[in-house]
Length: 179
Ligand code: APR
Image (cartoon, rainbow, N blue to C red; front, side):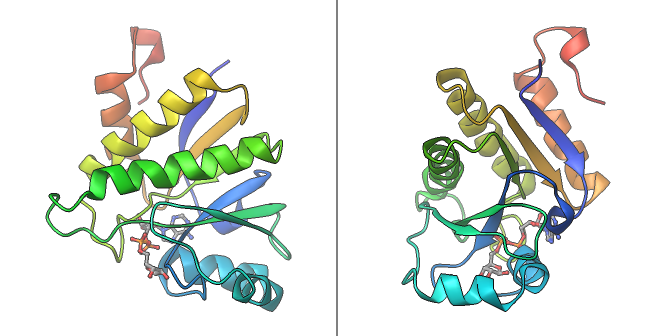
């Protein structure tokens, strides 16, 4: 069974057990997917986040999902793109690993990710996709949980980039190719 997939959608509508929020280090909300998740989850999410005292870039913190379908939200601040020679790739990989580790620790079986850092934070999509897919696939190869991970792209264009990267690196056979 394929444990990873790429879909197009609005992550606030996800029915995964946990969704990931592309947060900032204050964890006090923002625009983009952060703003959308807080708007959909309701004010209790911000109240819980306030008590977390922020989160370092590349790390992750867990909260409940409140009015979201998802039971949990994994908040992770991605790196701000500064040209690629300031440790951005390592920090971005750490976002994915930290969220997956936290999910596994809590016995969470399904996790949906947005494309972290590729909006406001300016990380070039194809480079971010390469880092994201490697971090996810390496983690899944070493761990039984989560059972299912999805990359939820907000647009078909973004999904195409992720599929291209997938097909380049992970499609062992024609049957594995994503179109
Ligand atoms: N569902 C899925 N993906 C979404 C959604 C959504 N509802 N809304 C936006 N996206 C996508 C964007 O298209 C982009 O590909 O999420 C990706 C991440 O974009 P941002 O939300 O801008 O996040 P990021 O680039 O990590 O910047 C984080 O922005 O919102 C603030 O508080 C946040 O300061 C932090 C910064």
